Length: 248
Image (cartoon, rainbow, N blue to C red; front, side, top):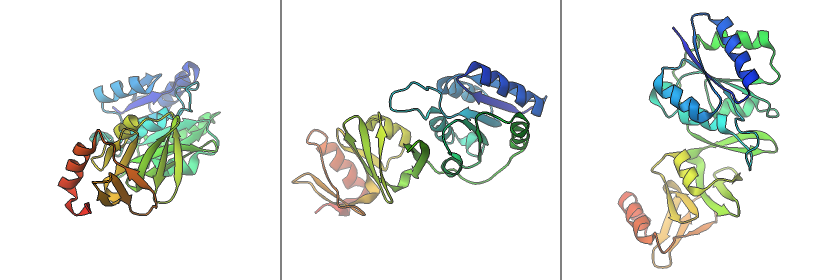
């Protein structure tokens, strides 16, 4: 028996999605959640064959909300869900191409739904198979559209008022309402470390370090980062262990 998890904050739409899944395959077990937290709990207790996820699960959240997209990214970090198909349901303006690049093995359905078309997509997704490996990405909104960059292309992130200013290989952008702690948890990689309280740096982009003056010189950018005096010792020990040639 196939198992489907629906994550949708609106009761009426969640019930409609449950009905359509049941019509697509009467032998499917359907689980429904109104939040990503509840969705994680269900996904860990069961073996889900298809996720149906609304991108905006907290419409009134300050700084915008992409909870469904974050859920999809994080669930890809669970080994058994690396290849599980995801159907995004969303009212965000023109997200199709961006979302398909952000999370592979997915399909995007715009609200309001064409029930017959959505039913066909659900049926196809329940029989979908793929062997591609998913790449971790960082999401941000740009003029109302959802975009992303591969985590490995991020050079550094620096706190700026109520946002994180992020510089990557190809572009710069701001993450509203995001903290360094939250970004590090989202990236979940030993390549990213704090060099001071409000700054995260990708160790792979460090060109050299001046430990006396507490400066970090980076590749592919003219930006120079400062090492915080409080965490200097721990930061330098960690970098020296991995990249001993970086010190001037």
